[in-house]
Length: 187
Image (cartoon, rainbow, N blue to C red):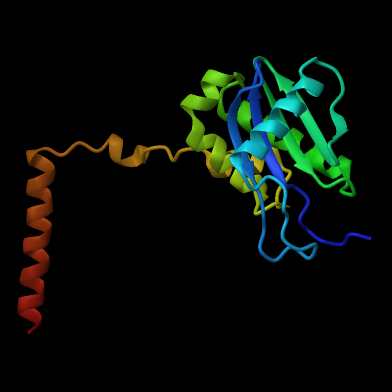
């Protein structure tokens, strides 16, 4: 029985021709199953991605067992998003994590989860991924919470409406002068 928390080995985004848009492979040092010998070289990764894309390029299913790995995937316009895990992992949990990630990305990218939007907002995509998966461990499956932590901070609206003019400067000067006079009189 596998009781480890390391559930995801890779996250991939491939475009409609099978080319890599984004790939993040996880090889945690403290994995109880030992060091993973797969996906160490770029050549191995690209070969795996090409074969996986060949099996999943047509819309349909959402979970397959490919080359000894569990692949959970979702199609979105011109990209396919994948979570790759070991064959003994819980496919429902992986599917929930992928659904949460795609929902978060859809919120952040304003309902256009496509190749161009992903590349233009790669920082948000990677932050969203890091909020969902930490070194292969699924840490959050609440899409709204992930999206809210990733969004860019808005400028402080209180300071935007602040008008500084001669009258406010004079008022501040008079207040400081009065306070200084009071302190001097107390001494």
